[in-house]
Image (cartoon, rainbow, N blue to C red; front, side, top):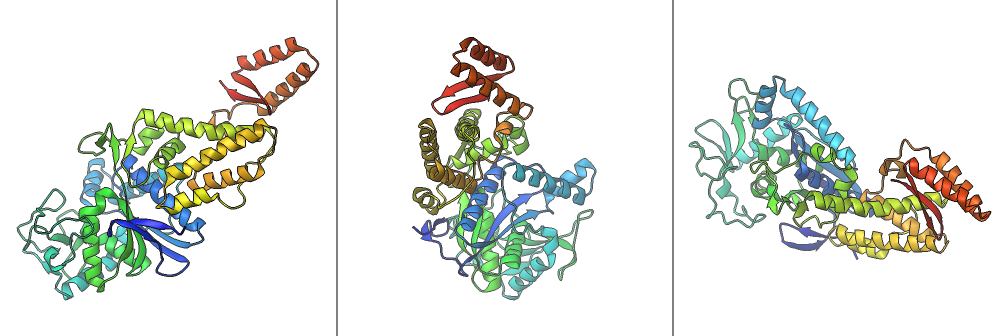
Length: 458
């Protein structure tokens, strides 16, 4: 089965055929760096990390671009509140973003452009839009995009342009010809950062940033554009309008959107006050548990976030790490190899169906455990299992780190287990029981299995 992607624009799964054979250009909308990233951002990070990993596994050379918006009203306000420069704030928040993404096991994109480094690209795109009559100067001096000039407006979001009204993210402005028109270039206000342009000093509107940066790094037409469901309208709708009009057609060939994160069945949002930063979650749970939670739900479906769900994800990972410990104690190597199981590849090729892929992983966990119970060496199944976990970016930690045993003297425990085994062979059960109790007092529990004695921290 070849890779199929659900395209948000056509609302159906489509066979993936890259523009250039063997190569993929992918752009994902990043964050506005005025604060720490939240769980909704974590979902975007993990979802498109999985897409990136699978495309590479399929043999594609992937150019993965994810931007940072580093000039914005929120950034300006936050820097002023903290009494620091905008550059200090954005540098700090980008570093924090990288720490969070790294903790979640996300690979770094090939390019991470900042908006402020692409002012000329934005100016050039706005100039092209004005030259073709798609943009105009409002009475306020701002440069605006004329939405009704683009006949395909609303196709991505499914909205009817005649029924749309100005909303919270489409500011009403007396200088507009139509309330749906949106800002391409804002004229400078006193004390705000500004750049020179043919229309005077100012800064770009939010939507033009991604249109310009994606085309600058990937060309006027590229393969995949992704982001959260909340960006579908108006941000991605506006991106399409700007890029297609400026470039005489083209732009992203496949659109991918991940579902919302729900807290107690209610969409997570800052306005409702029911959101958690990634850092707040990682104060209570391991980062890999949060990643696992993201994988347990298909990326297009709503994700239910709760302590109960996180504990369930932890329990699932414990099953893999318990096996990883058995493998180590059996003297076997936890290493990838061979071809991926057909069922796993089929799941991933079916629009990155990670829940189905996880089902294949846990079937292999069961098979490897059964082989160990029979005192067999599960080479092929084990190598396939490790390969699958690597694709999904899980089971990355050492057993001792996962179970909180970095401070445990593993060599001592193994000596005691070996001594206990000799005592049992000699029918010295009193000595064997004494060793078990000695280890228990040190917080180490022994479990006798058909394939040998294993241990874990109490």
